[in-house]
Length: 110
Ligand SMILES: [Zn+2]
Image (tube, rainbow, N blue to C red; front, side, top):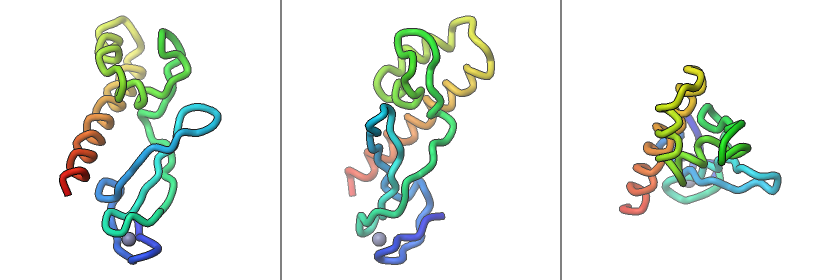
């Protein structure tokens, strides 16, 4: 649970407006803002799904980033002969990307 430092509104990480802030070193981190007053709440730690790919054309990119930009590639990877633990991470990254896109649409409609 997050608490807004400005208006004191308590909200879950899914209620808060979460945006990505690119990092100088590459990749990005997630920033949570209040869904009522838009005040900065905190930087969210990377969760699963922000693992990096270590091979292929997106080597060094975060899986969740690739899920946002080229989901088809990850879906194709899932059909390949790769480790089951890696497949689980890829599925997780795709699911999180889809959930986030849904959330962004909701935020736009407010
Ligand atoms: Zn607030």
